Amino acid sequence: MVARQHVWVPPLMGALPPGRSRKRTRAGAAVVAAGLVLMCGAGCRSIPLSSEDARAAADPVDVLRQAADTLLRTGTSRTRTSMEMATGGTRVTIRGAGVYDYAQRRGRLRVRLPQGAAGTGERRPITELLAPGALFMKNRGAGVPADKWVRVDTAALSDGNLVTGGATDPLAAAEVLRGTRTAREVGEAEVAGTPVRHYQGTADLAQAAGKASKGNRGALRAAAKGFATAEVRFDAYLDDQGRIRKVRHRFSFPGGQHGNTIAVASTTLLYDFGVPVAVRLPRPEDMYAGKIAED
Picture 1: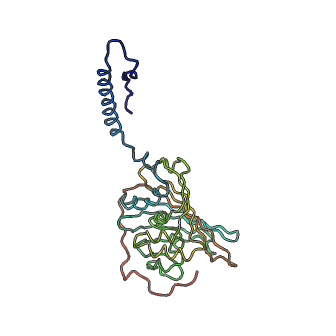
Picture 2 (picture 1 turned 180 degrees about the horizontal axis):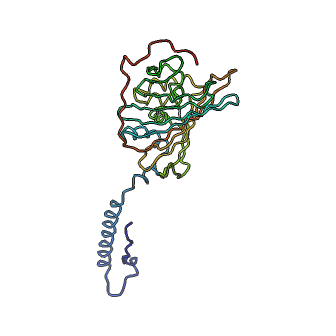
Picture 3 (picture 1 turned 45 degrees about the horizontal axis):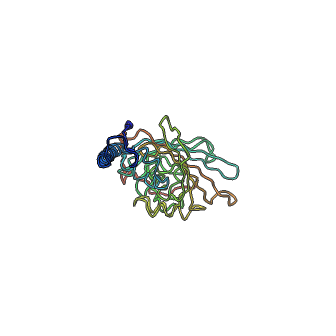
């Protein structure tokens, strides 16, 4: 902060101090005015807004639409996911954890289905590899050998793999925010000890698809058509660098028993930015080419 300086300002003309002429007063006033201009010019330009202050003053819609680009510049992170699905009085929660490389648009998750999710005991974790336009799953079950991978085209899924894999691709979760239509800043909060700004709003999946990266464009278009509504409500928590620390989406799509709509709350946590990440996609000989049984 610039220290305040007290300067003598000449009195108005007509109330001159004794022994001083109007000419000298006008000259003094010009000197003082010039000094004030110099003070403001030096002082004002030397106090730029911090990045945090600039974000606070920015339009929340613009801030959220840029969040995916910020992740792309960030590089990598660890992630934890949680997906809650409810229909007809039944609620199921699926959790996952892993890493993601935003530059390469690849990630690796271990997703654990809860006991009773498929009418059986608790399953071993499913390993998932996330790539542009594709989801690879190992230990998928349903007749697939444990050492084989299954590839799914995300653009062919009615939910664009925002739900099918039991976790939302972290980059896709961020790119949903590209379709932000309304948003407001709720206030300040903390996520895992990190100060964040909390935003609430709605996003349009069709609009997000039009602005998404090539790998997620088809998947988001499929979700816009397959969900009960293309409008997605969300809560997003961004740190002082504009990085998503937590985002929670609320989806709904048809498919429950007796025609009930399935309500989904998908939460993605991002942390340890910059962690080393290496995701290798399966070789052709590691892929399963047989028929997948119905769960």
